[in-house]
Image (cartoon, rainbow over all chains, first blue to last red; front, side):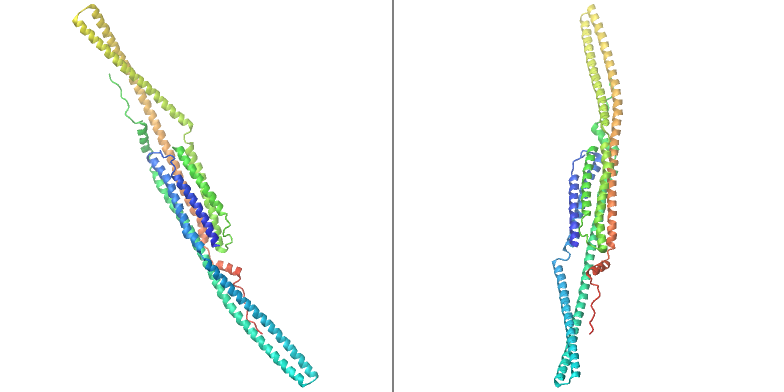
Length: 245
Length: 245
């Protein structure tokens, strides 16, 4: 997700650069350059302020690049993906092992049931006709049944061990993954906050770029500029005087 | 000059419109739209804030058009130029008249000098040889000299009248022109100040557009978002329990 955010910021950077380029170009315009006096000074400053604004936006875009786009982009490289896959495989292996142990338990449980059934059948046969051969059979069946019982217990034990291990690993991994997700959110939060900080900064700097223009516009003195005009248009020259004989 | 300033402002308007268009377009980008939880909310707001910024810049450009460009452009239409020309012609006519009256004075002054010279020559001739014819000549020359003197006085009088009228008109016109120049400077000053006011406003509005993003970024809660993640990834599900026989 942070990669896409970085892409978004990159687009924003391009917009800022374009805007700055246009402002800077316009600031060099010769329009109304002939305006003189205090008004001329204010006008020159106004044009210059566009260049200053352009610089502010360029600085914004540079900082967006180094302080937002790049960190978002570089967050968790390819190694991180490999690590995640390792976690995944590890848990999958454990799950597979658990499933196979469960199957073993089921199989052992069935084997025990079979043995017990066999023992039961043979015991009933013994009641009908007693013989040495039958007694041997029953002993054998009882032994096999006991062995099947032991088998089942061993399988259950193995299953429980695996289950316990799987659970522990699962908890550890889940906690690790959850921690990583929290880290990711905090990282993004931090850098998006950097974005808003830079935006605020830009507005502040922009404000201060207009201040010199404001100052000079306040200083515009029509009376003073009128004098310039009078000089140029010679409306204040010494008048011709009356002629004497 | 104010026409060129209006042209400059027009260029600025175009830059703002382009910037707003680009910001608005980017705000609709689907990038990282899948981000969820409080971080997702903040991200959505951040994208939306670009649209709000675009609106601010669009408003700026609209106001630049109606409150700066148009007034500068409409200041003193064609009638004003006609009036200025009338002033010019009027003063030029008076100046021409004054020059011709001055030439008349010079001519009359020369005529008087000629007559006086003539009278002097004739008076000297009378001293050498007296005759009736000579006395007649002197009388005639004296009369002509007196007449030339009267002519000169009349010419000087006419010149002085014209000079006086020219001066009065010149002063009136100059004062009128100077007043108009002051008006022009004040008009431009007023509308350039409107420009800086709008720029300030834009920065202010821009600031406030980032505030909701700031708010939501402050509210980003990794623990809460982790829960979402846990639900999706089922890392918090009930674990398998130990098996009994």
